[in-house]
Structure formats: structure tokens, C-alpha cells
Length: 155
Image 1 (cartoon, rainbow, N blue to C red):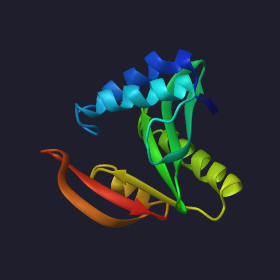
Image 2: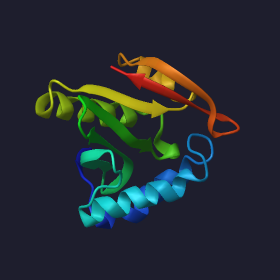
Image 3: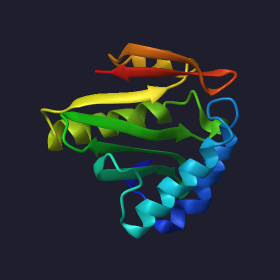
Image 4: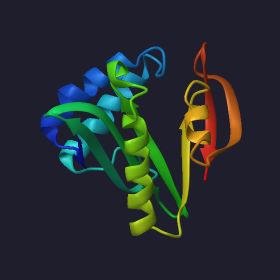
């Protein structure tokens, strides 16, 4: 197993991972937003106006991409925002999500030790982040879709 920086050649595999998690974990309209995020990473541009810098990674095993995840430095704040973390639905519950989260937390701790880590997720994934010390700070019902609430969390 290896975690490395995202490359343009990873685009199709990451899109397939996103689709494998939609609509259970992501709303349908997020697929386009994710594609825009990937294209920005490929071009070396920022996907979001609030970003100072963005990082994206893939987790691969035997040359197969099983997951992807990133983070961004929020401009003019002390926050780092975890973004677009996901594991192919066929490989969930095998520790790959944990590895991606630990990798990002370690990277942030080493490179940006004074930053607070924040994220937004759904009620389906919030318990996963709670296991790693994240606390819910706000809940927005039906934010992503009729069945997906937004849970804002920090650590």
C-alpha cells in the first residue's frame, strides 16, 4: 500500500471512486464539484476561492487506486479543511479510510502544526471522524440532499 500525490492519470479512477459512493455518501450534484476539484489539481490551480493552497492524494495497492483524499489551507485563517476523502465502496471497512486520514493528519501536523483541522461530512461518516477526536460543531439538516445532513467538525 502506498499513498502519493494525485496525478492527472488518476482522474478516471478517482471519479469511479466518487461514483461508487454516490448517492449513499455524496449527493449527485457533488460529482460535478469533485470533477472540478480534480481538474484544478491537474492544472495546478486552486479549486476554491477560500484556498491558500490545496493538496490531494491517492491510496494505491497493487497499482489499483482504492481511495483518495486531500486538504486545503483556508486563506487568512488558522484552519485547514479536510476535503474529498473517500474509499471505493468495495474496499470500505478495511482500514484504507483510516490510513488516508492518518496520512493527512500527520502531513498537517508536520507542515502546519499551529493550524486547526476542520471538515464537513454527513451523518453517515461523522462517527468515523469522532473516533479520531473530531467534534461536531454544527449540523445543517438536508444540506446536501433530502437524506444527507451536513456535519461540520473540528479537531
